[in-house]
Image 1 (tube, rainbow, N blue to C red):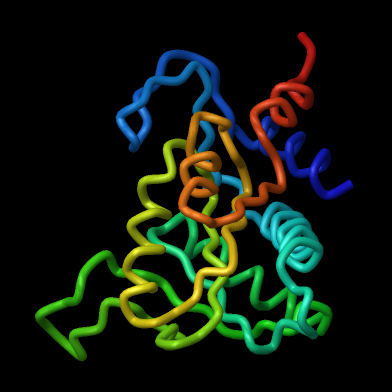
Image 2 (cartoon, rainbow, N blue to C red):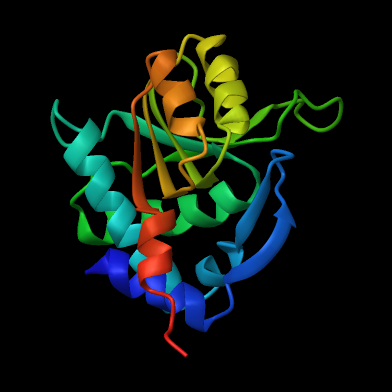
Length: 193
């Protein structure tokens, strides 16, 4: 139910557009999805968090309640999803995770010099989270970075998989990816004129 309701809400709030777009991966697409538009709405953030909580629990939390897992992501899209997702787990006490980190992309030369803000992923089991998966480059770089600090990437969960090679590329290096929605889910929810 979350999946279809979220897809419909994405169309109605203008988060999905048709046309000719260049994506951050450099790839071209006839479909543009701006998850920020949905994650900045209470109903959208709630639907996204509950749906993501379900797919993460069903696919990755086989050894207990998940309280030993840290969620993490890179960039604004992941950051906007991680907050509601952790709150959902905390409020409903069903997922167990209550901590997350956000990757800043590089170790900073100012302040505390951290690359990762929030929970420290060093040596921990980590589930990487992102809003949209296209080529997988961002998640691959993040997986490499957390593995360098002895974290174990146990999986990737995304709000939307565009099915443009990212999930296959991650699987090729041993990282299972699950998605709440894909391109077909969005197109099936497109309002009829």
